[in-house]
Length: 157
Image 1 (cartoon, one colour):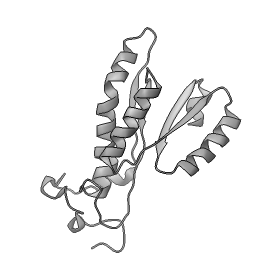
Image 2 (image 1 turned 120 degrees about the horizontal axis):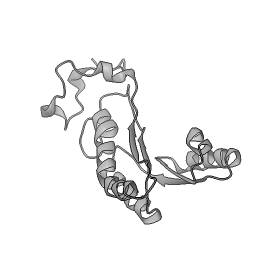
Image 3 (image 1 turned 90 degrees about the vertical axis):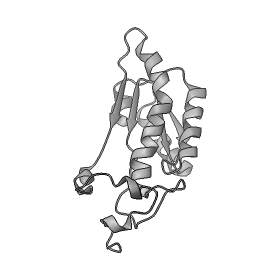
Image 4 (image 1 turned 60 degrees about the horizontal axis):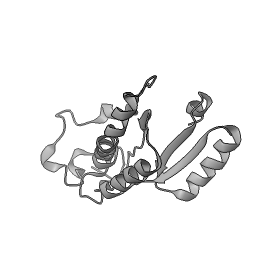
C-alpha cells in the first residue's frame, strides 16, 4: 500500500479478517503517508456473504474505484472447505476474488467513463499456480476438501 500511497493516492481501501492488525497497519502507513486516508473494510474471502457485505460497505463509502488489487490468498493448509462448502484454497483464492470483482465492476466502469481515469483490476498470485492439478480444475470435487489432490501440507496424502 505504501507504493500506491507514494504515488499520490488520496484514499486507499483495504480488507482483511483482522481489524486489530488493520489498525496497526493504518497507524504505521498514516504516519509515513499523511496525505493518504487508509480505510479498512473487514472481509473474509473464504465466506461469500462476507465478500458481499464488504462490497456493500465499500459502495456506501465511495463513488469511484480506480484500482482493484486482488491479493488475498491462502495455501499449504490442511484439506478443508470454506463456509460455503468449497475447497478452501479455491474458495478463498478464486471465488472470493471473482465475486468481489463482479460486485465492484459497475463502479469501476462508471469511474472509467470519467475524464482522465485509468481504471485497472490487478490479480496477484504466487508460484503456487504451478502446483495446480495437471488435469485442470476437478469440477466434480469443488464442493469438498479435495484431499485426494494432495497438498503442500505434510499431513495430506
